[in-house]
Length: 418
Image 1 (cartoon, helix red, strand yellow):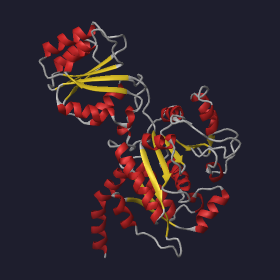
Image 2 (cartoon, helix red, strand yellow):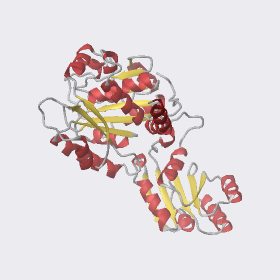
Image 3 (cartoon, rainbow, N blue to C red):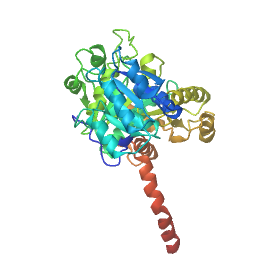
C-alpha cells in the first residue's frame, strides 16, 4: 500500500481534521459567543483525548491562573482589549509559561501588524472572530501536524442496523468500487474478529490480520501494519479477521485507536466493516469515523435500530455529516416491506441507495469469493455500490453538480431532434 495518503483530485479532503493527541487545554474567553464555540469544540469527537477547560476572564485571568501553576499544553486566549494591553498580558504570561506550551489568540480586529507581533512573540496562531466550530478545530489540530506531513486518509464506517442485513457485503463491495472505479488506494478493515467474512468474500486466507494488530499494540507500527495487509488488487488491501474461536474477544474501548491512526496516516481511504454489536470500541469506531453508513432492511426492526443509531450519532457528531442510510435486500419475495420514502421520513434522512434483492447474483458472488462488479459490472447493483462509493469519498456532490449543469442542454437537444 502507499506510504502516504495522497488524495486524488475531487476528493473532499478539506473537511478531514485530524483528532488531537492526548493533551491538556485551557481557554480563557471574554465573550459568551466565543465561549460557546469553545465549549462546542471541546465536546467534538476529535477532542476525545483532550482534557479541556473553558472559563471566562481573557488574558488577565490566564496570567493570574498560571503565576504559580503549571501551564497546559495549549492555552487559548480571547481578547477584546487594545493591542498594547494584549502584548503586556502575553509578556507577563511568558514569564510563567512552561516550555512547549502553545498559545492561540482569538481577537476581534483583523490587524496584520498585530498578527506579526504575536507571531514574533511565539504565539502559534491568531484567529479573528467570528468563526465556525470547524475553523477553531482545524486550527487546534494543525498545532500538532508535523511539517510536510501528508493529508489524512478518510475513514468510512459501515454498520448494519441489525444482523443479517448484508452490511459486510455492502462494505466490501463499496471498498472494491472505491479502489477500482475511483482509483484510490483503499484498505478494508474487518472488525468482526471471531466471525468476519472479508477473507471469504475476497477469496483470501492470510496467515495474519487484524487480530495480530489488536492483541499486540506494543509492537504495532507502520511496518508491521504493512506486513499484516493482504493485497486484493492494485489499489485494495485487506486487514482480515481470523474468524476463529480459540479465544474470547473482550476488547477495551480504545483497542483499535492506534490501528486507526496508523491507517489514516498511510492510506487515502479506509473502509471499516463494523459488526452488529454494541461495545465501547464499536461505538467509538462509529463516532470517530469521518463518514458513517447504516445498512438496513426495509422492515420494522431495522427501522427501530436505525433510528436509535441515527439519533445517537447526530448527538455525538454535531459537527459532522449526518449518517448515510442504505436500504439493502429491497424487493425480497413475499416479504411485506416499508417503503423507502416512509423509512427515510421516520429517520429524518434521505436514502442514499436502495439495493435490490438478487439471490442469484449475491449468492454466486459470495460462493465464488468475488465482488458483484466482477460478475455483473453493468447492472443496477454494481451501479448502486459505485454511487455509494462516490458519496462516502466526498465526490458525489461534485458529480451531481456537473450533471445538473448539462442536463437541461442535453434535454433541449433531444427535444429538437424529436
